[in-house]
Image 1 (cartoon, rainbow, N blue to C red):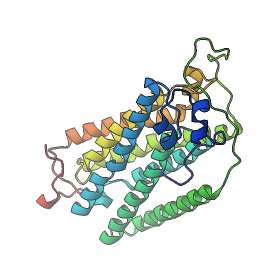
Image 2: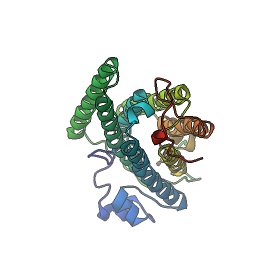
Image 3: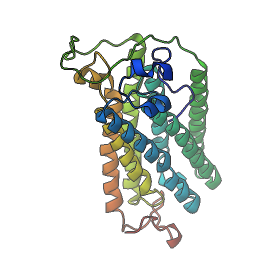
Length: 312
């Protein structure tokens, strides 16, 4: 999920240290200069720390699957290609949506890295599919997958080169105030740019939720999770948990109440916490099939060389 122009388009000089005292009074300077966020109290700092932890989880989550795939060489039969494609689609939409909707910087950082990780995993899947030369009818699916990867990569490269007009949004004190004259109980209207980002973010949430279903079906059909690293899902579960908490703990922007803040971030919360539930179901599959005999996609039993990586 990562790409070049990652900072939200906010007021000019948002990260300028000269404006730190005026735009972010009593805030953390390292968070301001390093992340472009204004963290003024313990709640904001907790949001930043959880967001950083989620980034670490997402960064290392794919490594166990890379290792498993290189060791076993059966990634094309263990993982569903639709799981990978829908996951890539969700991450790509999440990246574009978070960029357009001026989401938190940490949200955009997470989006960029995961797109790159998805592309690498899909490339590995294609490599093993081509290497094993499984049925000719699946070659068409490989071509479709590669075309999607190239199309998304070209689209993201084009998006990164576009320099949108900055929206002048002055961000001052972002914590709640009991004496504020703004009606924080109402939902603040969306800007045209935010509407586009919100819509794309909603599509990404649907893709995230749908991406787990093919993998759940593949595990059920094979009656095995052999070749799939559980640590991939365990780290994603931890990442989505800390990611969702980081968004929920963040103080609303000035003029936004809790309700308005949640509505503006709803697609990303659903995409994060919704897939968390489905990943827990996949975890149950790992538990159920932990002692099941290894089966290939054609129903034949595997040999000891294809024993599950995760011991019971």
